[in-house]
Every structure is written in structure tokens, then in C-alpha cells.
Image (cartoon, rainbow, N blue to C red):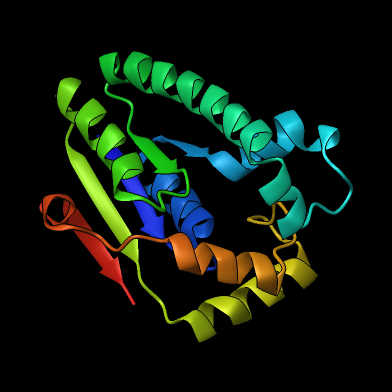
Length: 169
């Protein structure tokens, strides 16, 4: 089984993924956790939206390295029927399609779990997460970063909706 968790910043993807990981007895892959653990020490103490924009290539290269390894792990885990839960941002339909196609190639049951909360609820959650730094915290998200992520998120398309298992709003 391959589960894609989709939602905008602050929707609760990582928290939901942790619950789904336990429920399905699977393995959660969360890109924020990977990036923080592998590369954060190479970034400024408080990366800003300007830093991300100026260093986009550096950042995207490292995300791709993480995802290449994650895809290898998904392929390996498919052989042992271990459910894989993906919290990889999935802001674009092309990004989601890459993993939907991988799941099909591996003959996996594919699930999309869509967390669809209003921007007001999500921003409130982000502020709480920033201050409490709980289990799902990986980095502070500024209002500017939140707004930027809002502007690039692509809603689910018809192809993706055929895999829709859960919608939470």
C-alpha cells in the first residue's frame, strides 16, 4: 500500500501521517524531517523566504536526493508488503503523479488522504506548532512562507481523485 498525504501548510499532514503509520503498521516518509536531519545544519539559523528563493536550486537538489532514496525504499518495502505513507509536500500535480505512477508500477494499492482545511485554521495551527514545537515540528514557518506555499499549491485533479480514500476538512 502506498498512501499520499496531501494538504497545504498547516493541514496536519505529519500528525496525520504518524497516526496512519501506526494504524497501517507501515513506514512514514516525511520530507521535512529528512531535510531538517540531513541538511538543516548547512542552512542559516533562521532560513527566510528570501533565502529559499535565492537558494532554490540548492534546496531542490537536496529534496531530490532525499526523494530518490525514498523511492528506492518504497520499491524495496513493496516486496515485503510494508505500507508506505508519504508526507512529501505534494504541492503540484506533477509531483503527485510521479508517486502515483510508482505505486502502479509496483502493483500497490494507492490511497490519497486529502486534508483540506481553511487557510485561517491552518495558519492558526502553524502558529501553535511554531510556539509549541511538538512531535510534528520540524521548522518555524513564517506568514510569508505560509502565503508563498498557498500560492503554489495545485488542487487535486480528476486523475488523482480516483485514488481519494479520505478527505478531512
